[in-house]
Image 1 (cartoon, rainbow, N blue to C red):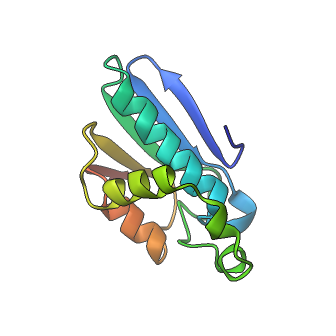
Image 2: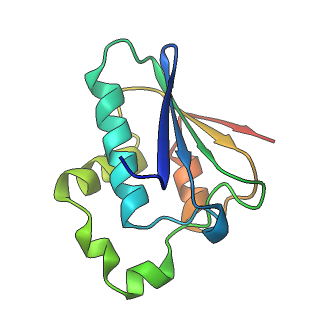
Length: 123
């Protein structure tokens, strides 16, 4: 499990927290892999009733794709299963409800990620 996406069980809820505040929680290979793993965990456990997706810090929920890591080719290290699961998340095909808990601004693809959630709560 990556430190860049922290997963925590809270009763019947799986909290998935983007944990790259220095990069405004931008999506890199580790975060995409972690999101895929979180969705697979939630869908594979009948006790989990929902996923809450949030970010760390108060600067951004998510700034979208990390363009530096993308340009360096890091995204190529993301496994096929993780990418397929991330695609299902973005297309609204996840079988567990996903709550987007926007702790700050959502920019570019981060806004798209938030819109892919079933319910959005913003502060």
